[in-house]
Length: 441
Image 1 (cartoon, rainbow, N blue to C red):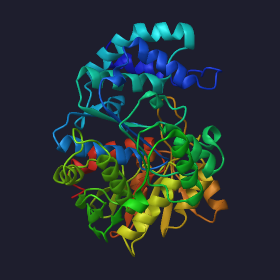
Image 2 (cartoon, helix red, strand yellow; image 1 turned 30 degrees about the vertical axis):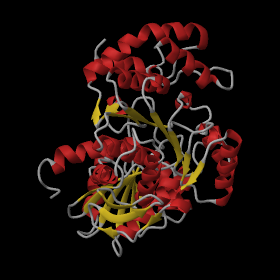
Image 3 (cartoon, rainbow, N blue to C red; image 1 turned 90 degrees about the vertical axis):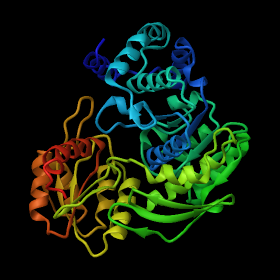
């Protein structure tokens, strides 16, 4: 099996039906990993959940561990450009050749599990591949981002050294529940006896749900808001500097990532790292070094130009609100031109309502990717119109970006957002046609 064949196989599992039994994911995932020799038990893990920020926080933790000299695996989702991004070691993706080899090695286990539990899903297979890759490369630790929710997520088969929940927002309500408290209860399903759970959740209702779940599970509850202080940041177009003070240390953070929410994510990452024992816990200097080397493509990623361009994968209302707040803070008195595509399964009205708070023009577009459908641009324009937002529907995303750039003032900021897929497509185009040509400098 080569990489193209591996991709074809995996994309064929995107619509794989779920078992009718409620805990289908854990039953099938446990059986699958058992067939593979339980690779997830061969190294320490850290388990990071939340509605927003869990990918950034996971990457921060992994970067700090790598900076401390630990060989560190990282599994996050969704990927921006390629499936190989879901299994990284010390920041490097698994190679396409090794990815295909691993999937080939997994096929007997897939066939065995399929006979009893039905075929493992796309997500489960990629997660198991990451676990196997980390085991084969003998990592010292692995940071594992929760996929959806917590309780029944495929990642909830691990017994980590530390857990974390970054926040709770309204997303995946068809699966997790219609209220913040219901969603918090599902996310708190990752709490385990004796395992510290670091929580950056601020809303009183969801926070109480998580605290109660920790008490019931016997998991120490570690609240970020009570245990850390974040100093006033110094914000630049490419980075921000601030301090994070915990009961243990004061960290001088230089973060090459924009957004107020990234300050909270950094504080969460630091507190997670402080829960580790002496064999894994990085020194203060390693934490600071790791955060300063952070690489987060597509997460409020800034490119200087006239106008400047920001790429951010704000694909739910919570992320959209955070993005708008951060844009207004980072670029005061500037106007914005949003290039937005939204997945058909997402709550487009709530996402657009969040973007309505910015002084901006809007260009609604689409994306094309296997296994995913975009909301039609004219549908987005109609929803926006009902919210008092005027915008143009432009089906081709590259055309939408170029028209947004031509219509924006030199000091404005063009923001590509609303979906991971449109960010990936337009970021690739930007890197090939604008940044590579030196037009973004």
